[in-house]
Image (cartoon, rainbow, N blue to C red; front, side):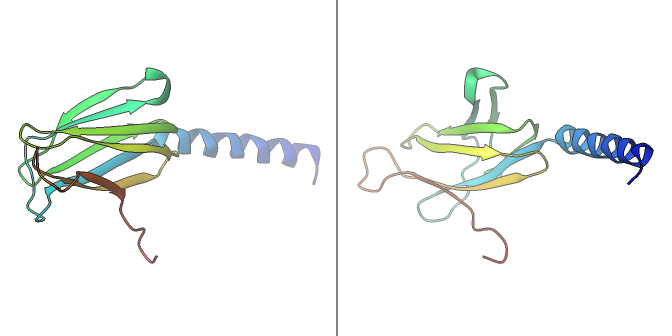
Length: 125
């Protein structure tokens, strides 16, 4: 490969990598009770490792939430709703262009069941 082609290849690679990084990633999911009923109004706190980029959101009428445009890194999600035991989802590594989906179940406060958070199964797995 000639020097000129090599340089053009490296420039193209850098541009593509920058575009992928700029695309950002996301975290989304649905909050439900232990019976599978969506829970609107739950507070979702997205915490980035190092404290940069922390965000809060409230679930919609179907219990859904979605954070997008996130930079690569490790994120922790904490979910709270009055009358339910809170849950913290373990840190998930997020890469540019990737959206992580979480399945969150909140149990009533004082009940025997515990609230839970698990990554959703990847399509085809």
